[in-house]
Length: 241
Image (cartoon, rainbow, N blue to C red):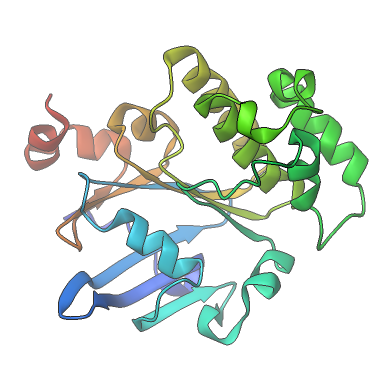
């Protein structure tokens, strides 16, 4: 395994010895990951590897054993609103949008804890995703899957995040929409926002991540930079290269 994983003391987000179970089924076992300042980290792995359980747990949706620290504070001691107020925003695979609200109303919900500069952030989101501006008055249920993914990411940006968690941002997207998401992510990275991505699309993950972790059967099997993992025979087999 690569030794590029940073020490927990150097990390904005540190996960140590994390274990999560659903009854008698262990979904995660002794998982260690870390994200440093300004870094984009991807957790890759097949369906059922435990990726969504990992980020759901970081987002406060599961009980766990081990430690999860954000900016040095154990997240079990913080409520979800407090984490958002501290700059941590989680865009779930479910998207969690309100279908009968308009696109603009859904976006503005992202800034409900911090509405200072809301209009500027809304303009920035519309610059990133012109499709959303075109549809700002439409009910969200009328959007395509790709447009809903844009809306979910846009709502996250409306919170003025310092740390953004994205669960399967590329899932089910047409290539043209995936390109829009990719360009938006590059813009976010330029702002030195920390990003944690869970992703089955290995090509997408390799393009954007500074470091990656390969998760399989609830455990980290490999970690390293894109270059080191692309040359790793174990990961090459998984990628299909």
